[in-house]
Length: 322
Ligand code: UDP
Ligand code: MG
Image (tube, rainbow, N blue to C red):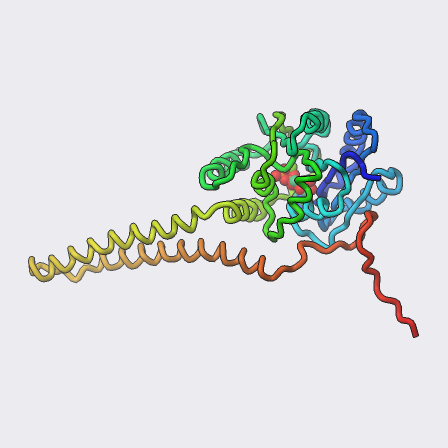
C-alpha cells in the first residue's frame, strides 16, 4: 500500500539525535491521522558512530521505519536522492536529523500541500546557535545565487520541505551527479509556496557540513544553475585586454615619440602578474564547469546501497548450479 507521506531523513553521525527525532516525528505523524499511513526512510550516509545500529533497532521495533544504508559517506544531497529513489509515499518530506528542522512544522507543511501546492518549503525566519561566520556565509551565498541564476531559488531555505509525488518523479528524471536539490526543485516549477519558522540549534552531536562540503555545495549550486562565472571570466579577459592595449600604445608612444623610454621593470612585472592572475582565475572557473561535465559524462551510479529493508531490485550473488 502506498503511504500518504514518506519522511526522508539523511543520517551522518547523528547517534545522539536519532531516538529523540524518531519519537518527535512519530508523535507528529500519528497526529496527522493519515488514512494510508506514513513511512520513515532513514538514509545512513556512512556514519562512523552508532547511528546505523540505532536505526536498525528502530526498524526492528517500529514497522514504519525503513532504512537505506549507503556503502560509504556520499554527502547529504546524495543521501536524500537515495531516499527519493526508494521512498514510496504520495508526498515526501525531507528533514534534517539534528532537530534543527522542527518535526512539528510538518503539520502546516502538509496542510498547505493539500491546498493544491506541489512544493511547500520551510523558510528560515531566524537561525539560532550557529556561528556568525556560518550565518553570514549562508546569507551571502543565497543572495549571490539569487542574483546570478535565472531561476528563482528561494533565499534562506534549506532542504526541509514537503514535495508531491509529481515533483519526486521529476527529480528522479534529472540525471545530474552534482545534486543541488533546492535548485532543482525550483527549476521544476509547478505551484510552490512556503511556511516560515525559527531554526533552532542542533539538538546534539556536531555538524556534518564541514566548510569543504559547504563550498562544494555552493559551487554545485552555482555551476548547475548559472553561467555567470563563465561570463565574468570572459568579461574580465576583455577588460584586461583593453587595459593592456592602452598600456601598449603608451609604451610605443614613449619609446618612439618621446624617446624617453625607461626599461620599465615595475610595469612589466605588474602586467605579467596581473594577466597571469586573471588567466588563472578564468581557467579555474572553466575548470569548475569542466570537472562537472566530466562527472556527468562518466555516468557512475550516484550511490551504492549496502543494505536496506525497502523493496529494491534483487542483486544477490548468482548461485552456481553445478
Ligand atoms: N548529512 C549527511 N551526510 C553528510 C553530512 C550531513 O547525510 O555528509 C546529514 C546530517 O546527518 C543532517 C543533515 O544532513 O541530517 C544536515 O547536516 P548538518 O546538520 O550537519 O548541516 P548544517 O545544519 O550544519 O548545515
Ligand atoms: Mg544541522
